[in-house]
Image 1 (cartoon, rainbow, N blue to C red):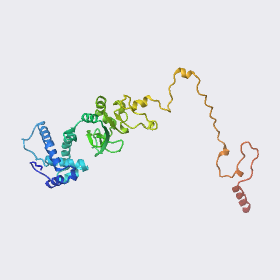
Image 2: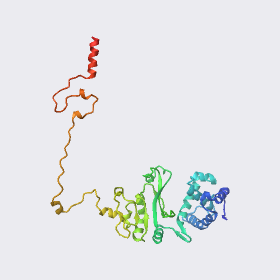
Image 3: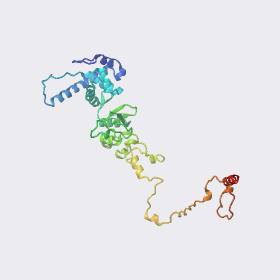
Image 4: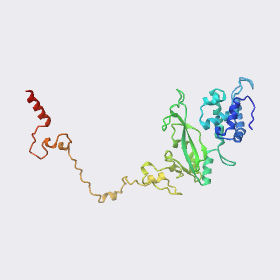
Length: 338
């Protein structure tokens, strides 16, 4: 049973959220564990924020908080699971939209710092721990970037254009997710602007440094991460480039050469090879015969005139002087008019 002290807003809403697991996807026991673990951290940060600025009122003065921590946590869980807008949650709990926005902004970082639990007593919080876990388990990991649509930033904001995604052509934020082969999430990175490329986001998170000097972990990625294989010693496996789809170079496990490096060292079948000077001095292939260009001939045109009524052909001396059918009709009409 979850017990909290202070002014409570939305008791019926809170009871409905806790009793029905479909709303948050968590049971009442798990929610109680979150309250017991994250609640003290939220209280410490709140008190540190108040103590970091000079006070103009006495301790305990001012407006009271309308939402206790339990309601703030439930509102954040509903928002993360169903992507409900802040206006809907504000109407549900009977508060202003700015209160819900502030509550979600305070609780989401605390939930992200908890990391992902993969087994009893084992929790991964950082990307370095995730790479070590993938290398120790001898299994492959999967990375991919996902976008979340957001509201258009306010006019006059300096980085307003950075939120426009080149893929979805919408205002969005991007995050990188790491999962195992079974699809269980191991890591979710902080958000970045929507215009940031997937490979750039991975480099900013230090994935190249962790894989280059870390354990021999295999990471599967899509075409958006092409180029990381050459920088990580082949630990990031991406599909071949579109120009190597037919003759894709093979990746040898345990070899220092990566797919990208082998494609650069192996000449393409359709690419001209640089020859040595002694090879150039020897007999080469026979010269190609000059291409004969066929000049345009008027007789090759497709006209509506019958062959019998066409002009003289090339190389002929006889001329067909028979008038056209339209000329004969015009002559007959003039004769009758006279």
